[in-house]
Length: 188
Image 1 (tube, rainbow, N blue to C red):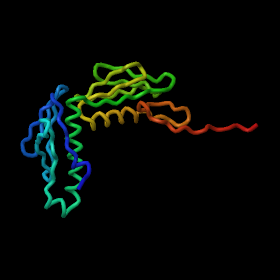
Image 2 (image 1 turned 90 degrees about the vertical axis):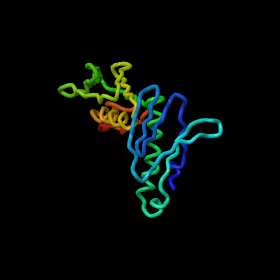
Image 3 (image 1 turned 90 degrees about the horizontal axis):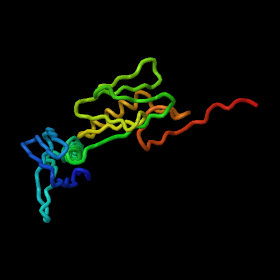
Image 4 (image 1 turned 180 degrees about the horizontal axis):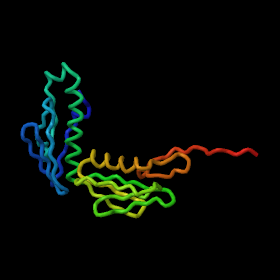
């Protein structure tokens, strides 16, 4: 059995969860999310001794022993449900830092415009479920309810100009270590 799948997901006080067969709806202070789980996996609500609500993800034992697919969906489904609960209660965010002379970001309405040394600025359309904030022209904060959507859009922004190893110029995640290379050495 999956070690991740066995873990119980605790539900914060302001979050409500509704189960309708394979569909799970999670509502919280930040918004609401819904997802349909695979048919091999099911969820159930449980209460602990200290009256706290929790979600338990289960897989059918007869199907799990015969094939590997239910086992892999077990851990995946538990992580997706956990991320839904975290997303509606706290939200997710990624911070990107731009380094390089003349490199900067601006907002045009809700869309992101990056001046990264190309002949034309790069315009990126922001998905409706995300919000983009600029702490400064060189610091971008991508935030939203769904962890996978936040990470995917942050990766797209980073791929416009990923950090190069000689001077470290480009777009990097906050706290990302950029491995540096030594430049060419001239003859004496």
